Length: 261
Image 1 (cartoon, helix red, strand yellow):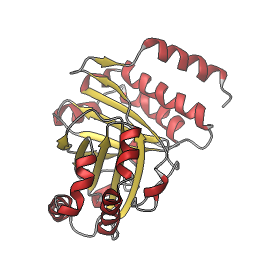
Image 2: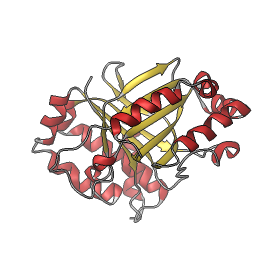
Image 3: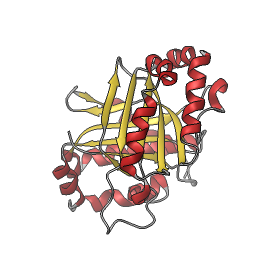
């Protein structure tokens, strides 16, 4: 499959939290209605949930509820991603991005090459770790990271997880916006999933799992890291024939019309 765009979903400060939640979903609906959607095969809007208290101090760069969640968009191919950027209809989505997030998504999104390293079961919640600046060059970082994540002290965490995914960043072109948070220093994104909240709570109650998180925090101590815990919400998957319900979208439209802005 093609590349994936992933981003920390910034909330437009002009919108209250619940109004923003509805606005984000409506933003996805607008994107789906435009010709740009033919280049996409999977889409998630994953909203922030609280990190368990017993490991909150161990999680590197914990964001709390500073962000609304994590957005993820999978493209059919590298060619499809490039074609989408030349779509005339792309101009229709950009003002909506500013209304939803406060600025254009291109300013803070990271383009990655997703690598599913481990997937044992469905994922309901997941930690998403954005590594914006690593001490080593990107290639060296991922090489040393893979050796680290496979080390014995990390085994209890990996055994408790439902999935482990790496997303090395695909560096932007030289013409990319200089204000883009990922920039050419971004190493990429790591996702560690759990079947559900109960599985996460059970796993984090084990001392060995807390120790693993402490080691991760130490390993990433020299990097600029942001970590967020989200509830995974798959809205669209062409391969699994998943599409979000029209009744939900209708309810969101009514909510947006009734909420003050």
